[in-house]
Image (cartoon, rainbow, N blue to C red):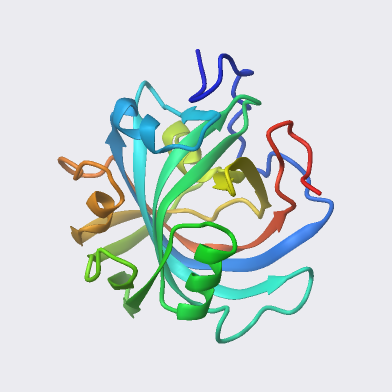
Length: 258
């Protein structure tokens, strides 16, 4: 099996509900709250051209997946400093894919990240080369129903929208292999100034709930360069959230960057 842009790779690391690696030095802290994970199966051939060099689609039973994940970012903080209450707290919605690199490290690749704060979106886009966009967003709770809405402001395609609502169900005691595959992701792959990097993360086990997708009107997946999903999602999950730490990026050789 070959990795995108490489001739070979190590076997993929096991999928574990606990963090795959220790983070001795924390670069970034934040919490992800009120998350809804909605996933559709995708053709690995559609996904592969959208991944960074040195990675390939990570598949489950032969399928790749595209995720629409909506949540509330809470108190982003740097280098152990207290999280920022206003600029570091905002709704976010991302379109993500699943990747594995030549070292066998499993991760996610973000095709877009809508954020309701202009400054974090601009910094994420210009400094960290992440596909952040500034959007008008909101999250509403009504009993066991959580609704998310977003409309892109900058950059284009301006006005790209997503609206969805989920009904939260029972707590999951033992997630299925697919549910582990889609949520137990301990890093992200990205290209930074032409260099492929892996940013590891660490957090407690996900508290997951089954969820029902009540409605979904989405333009973000197509705006991210993917075909529109066909049919119902293969997985809908909800989590009240977890605190998260990110470590130093790991370079192509698997070592922390300077």
